[in-house]
Length: 256
Image (cartoon, rainbow, N blue to C red):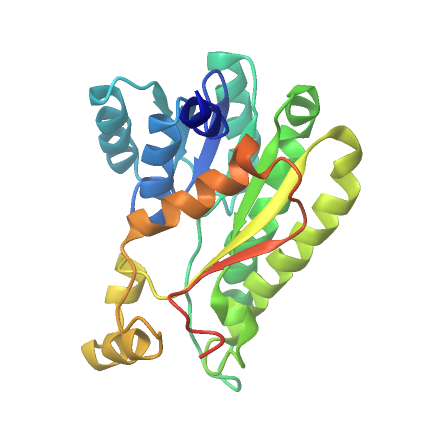
């Protein structure tokens, strides 16, 4: 019985979750984890085929999912994402703002266009997606938002100012959202992954990847699946009294 009570804390049956960037990497793993916990999952990503693959994976496991291809840098697409979710399932309970781009330019070479593209995807989209979903989140008895940031916000951000500035802004938005939306029972938290074995990390030179792994006390990159436990904790009843905080899952990089 005790084990059943503990397990029930992570039960998301009947809840509907939107996951941006849900077709690969951390987003895909979180989407599959949410489905395993019983949630209906809406997969949002730019490529329809990639969204469909994850939906098929979820359905093969007995879950329910919907693909809504969209570009979250486009505000109209965010409205459409919420509209299609509500049209299909009638509610929104969980929002995972995971989609990101990792444009990198040194200070002195940053262009207005690069700045706008980075801010639009990494920070602005999270705000306006939550605002679009807000009427439905307010109606949910278990509403939660998870903003995926980066441990880069705790570093100098050297050569990554575009990315880390946007993620730092998203971390601040997490706090503001939690403070303003708590009155409606909506919890908002952030997850700060360290180096994870994703396409974004693999786009770096091999030497850079090795350096990322060496910077952790565990001496390795994380699997995307290792972000599922932290995400489920922050989105489920297991963290019912947790809001406005950031969970760092970095293999011991920041303190090291």
